[in-house]
Image 1 (spheres, rainbow, N blue to C red):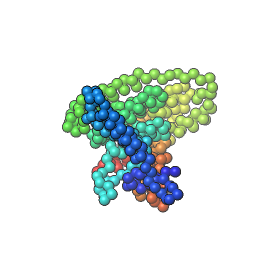
Image 2: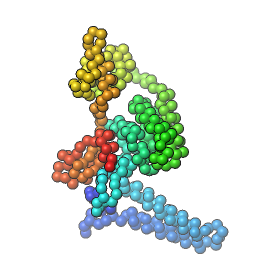
Image 3: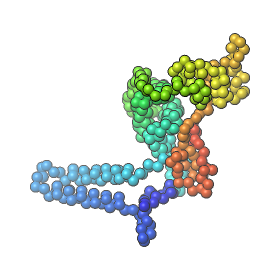
Image 4: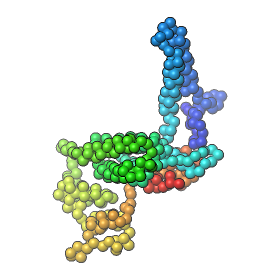
Length: 358
């Protein structure tokens, strides 16, 4: 079976084991040469044709070269070049590598298009896009911009089809449209990469997406089996205690009167405040009722405006401190350490942005 070297500095050759030892796989080169021979044969037939008015040798030669490029591009895609879901983060030039790893390059290489299809990674990617929209939009290259908006388009279409997580996408589009309005009207004309008309078209697309999400109607599911309302109260209560976002609790409480009663439990909001905030922060923003009781629900939203809340994700990017590689944990990477697991550290969306600030 073919063997791919684990050294990220290798040129990407594939090797195959034979009776005489390991040899470099030449199947792609042989196929390309065979394709070139066919092009040369076809070119010879065209040149020797009697109808010189129809066949132009210069155009045929150009078509043959274009065909070679298309074949090479197609073959590199099938070989999996740049399909690895990891990237080497280097902040200085070395003998083996020249230049720097940019945010746009990492954004293109980490395969976010497939990550949004994974429910564990969806919230992580959306949060990352939101942070880029707020502060790093002008640092993206032209290719990274195209990839950014392509992924955003896929996210919006996924939400419209699945009708899940619309609030997250609405917040993302709101931040993105606000940033673009400021950049286009103000100094953005001198700092935005690309034609200003392209950015205006993108802003119009964003406004169209917002309108589609605003008109989104949830389909009523007809199910004669067991529903959420049929569960015992203690199970419903345990479900609410698993939520880490106050808005999710409020949304679930609007489903049935029973869930609304459980979502207003003071103990539930107290646990939520204790999970996200420190006790010193409670003392600075105490909100008491007329009877002298602490209004934990109001305190949660008051504290949320002043302090960041803890972020929870099903799966995140990880950074290998030994190899300086950023990767998806499930995908892994070619680590050269004796104990790779001790080198891995989870990377929050904000940490991901900070890795590329020089």
